[in-house]
Length: 64
Image 1 (cartoon, rainbow, N blue to C red):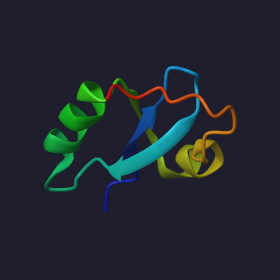
Image 2 (cartoon, rainbow, N blue to C red; image 1 turned 60 degrees about the horizontal axis):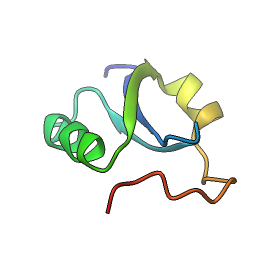
Image 3 (cartoon, one colour; image 1 turned 45 degrees about the vertical axis):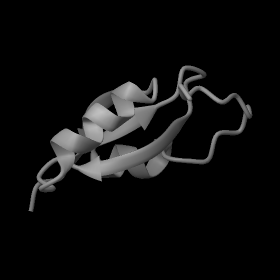
């Protein structure tokens, strides 16, 4: 098992989603995140556990 995942980051800086690096649909997911205005980083699961949360600043951040 790979211990890395991608996290989706809104323009406000909130980390709102994650997906395992070795998941079959990771490429499609990253494209979707990019189309919705999210940026992404590859980090460890442990770091993702600390950073992943609901957006507290209530900014949309996603393109509609």
